[in-house]
Length: 307
Image (cartoon, rainbow, N blue to C red):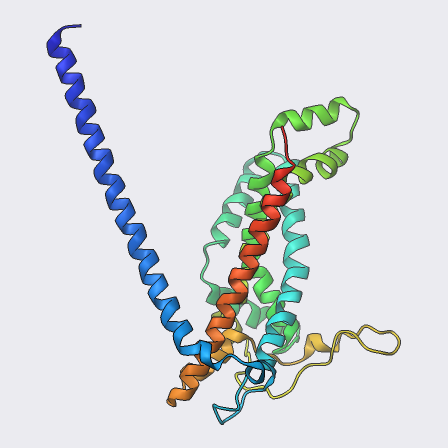
């Protein structure tokens, strides 16, 4: 190799390093811009709403008087709606992901289903609200109830759960499957005892991230007729007399934290704006808590994985 060629190669390497350095700086600045903007908004929200957080705020119903208004019915409604959402989306999403990844034949039909599932994950949430309005509210006559809200949000997060489950199963090495078959395991035994065991952490993370998205949704719930003012609670799921379990709460009217925030923000009084900020702090805390739980379980489950 001549000295001219060596010099040319060195110039190319130096030019590529400069381009890489410039790109790194641009990427870092873009990331810091987003993080700083988010932190400023969160700090402003917390500074406005944190003084309003007290026991009375958590245990009081909405009121026309801002100093007496609380989020009791809103956070109870959020929990009940998320209970229905999780009960539907988790088993259906995981089962669908297992079938598509492990059982379905790889042909044009499975490719079409995969494309549609992936596209559904990006559909605007208001579309799911319109679908639920026609199917659940008017078609199945479920009304503007907790079960309608839970099923709506379950449809919203179902594609995310399916895609996460498939990606988690796909990440398990094929040698795990071959070793299970070599020991005489059936296909379901291989999936249940080996593949799911190694992919549980990733699946759980995807589920909690999907539920964290669902708990903050407003548009589909407004579409199906969520109430903005509720001064009562639905019947409790557990009762003190036989049969001890009640399902009457499923058909009760509801409100959730995002809807309550929307109602307070739309009012002109400054005190209601403070209430909305306090409800926003609670909603952010719930979302961060759910993500922290996902990270914790993912770490604990992946810690024992060895292959």
